[in-house]
Image 1 (cartoon, protein in one colour):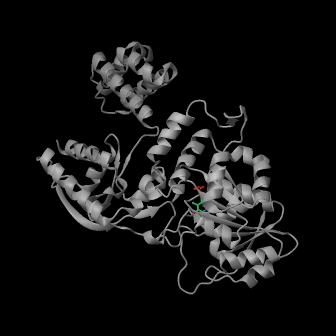
Image 2 (tube, protein in one colour):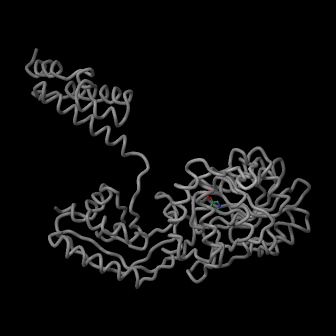
Image 3 (tube, rainbow, N blue to C red):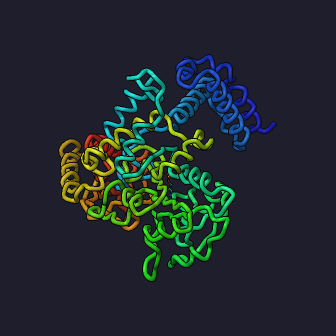
Amino acid sequence: MTDAATTKTTALRELPSVDQLLRSDAATRLRQLVGAQRIVTLARTVTEAMRTEIRADKSGNGTQTRDEFLKHAIKRMETLCAEDVGSGLKRVINATGVILHTNLGRAPLSDAAREAVAHEAAGYCTLEYDSTEGTRGRRGARVENLLKELTGADDALVVNNCAAAALLIITVLAQGGETIVSRGELVEIGGDFRVPDVMTNSGTKMIEVGTTNRTHLDDYRSALNDQTRLILRVHPSNYRVVGFTAAPTLAQLASFAHEAGLPLYEDAGSGALADMSDHGLGDEPVIRDCVSAGADVVSFSGDKLLGSIQAGLIVGRREIISRLRTHSLYRALRVDKLTLAALETTLEAHRRNAAFAELPTLRMLAMTIQEIGQRASRLAEKLEEQFPNHGFNVSMIDGFSAVGGGSGPNTHPPTTLLAIEHPTLSADEIEKRLRSSSPPIITCIAEAKVLIDLRTVTPTEEPEILNALSRITS
Ligand SMILES: *Cc1c(COP(=O)(O)O)cnc(C)c1O
């Protein structure tokens, strides 16, 4: 045997066995964290990986002692356990300035919603129970009533998300028949909501009319036949056609549909419960206006501009909502008690006209550049005071936040950004270290600077940012 081969054989003999690893004190501790079965798998993974590495190492530097190998293996097991436990959902600080950041969970819940989820709904609750009468109650009745009040619709229903709402509505109203939609509205939203796919899944034949930029009532008219079941209008959300464009108004389309004896469904996407043009979101359909313009059924998301939890909110004519509620698909798409609890408190805030004061999404949207600028300069001062040796070069620059979540693609609220540089650390390295801190701090990079937009950071998170920054260079 060659020297290298001898060293390898010796090294392989000194490797700890799975059993040895499992008998270590560390394994006993880790077993509490991940369970008995998982720890066995991890011990096998680690020993196998080490064996493969020694075999593959042609130079044969496996000169560690039995003890060193064991320590090394335990360390690797600990790392794998930490990765496993840490890979689940965890809180992050969103310093990107994107308010409805889909990857970061879209709308943050209000204090009242968190309270309701944790204290009213998490245990037993009156989900389908009327505690005054002692009889069975209807799931979601209160949320439905609030939605009726806030939108002026006859009735309302809540499902898992807006995609589920579209699936349910089109299935119930148009399965086996045809649905007419403008070519200007065949949009894809968020990577996996595509209008043509929803049509296919709902078992309706999609009839496209008009062109990308211009569609007229006559285009709809010429597509009518005895198979037509539904007229669909989709708010293009994250996409705008500008310039030479035309489309009938919702009211015109509604009269047209009703003359033809067909229902009109408006997928409003984000939608808004009140006019948002003061905040640059005049393009977002106001749900009450959709209803009064004659849409027979309207859907919108719970976790976009409504500022609540993931849900698909449906409002519309009594007869249609009742067909949706009694269809077997509804049972598969309905929401749970936690969702209803969060929605209830959010809708109550809208009803009290307190949405901009109480809902983080709307508060962030309305935050002025002056307020953000003051917070940014105070944070920079505190960094100097508390960590004078931080070593960063911190400046304040003008920039823009974003609404996100497919809402208001042209709305960019002006903001003041904290721009962070370091003489020896690259922006990529700073960004990575902030992202690896606990909780992870998510930032953007532009022109070799790490940018922090406090619009989407709560004041209670600011000390966490300071601490994370100080730890990077200490
Ligand atoms: C966002 C959006 C959807 C999908 O909503 P989810 O609640 O994310 O399922 C559907 N339609 C439109 C027009 C949208 O903007």
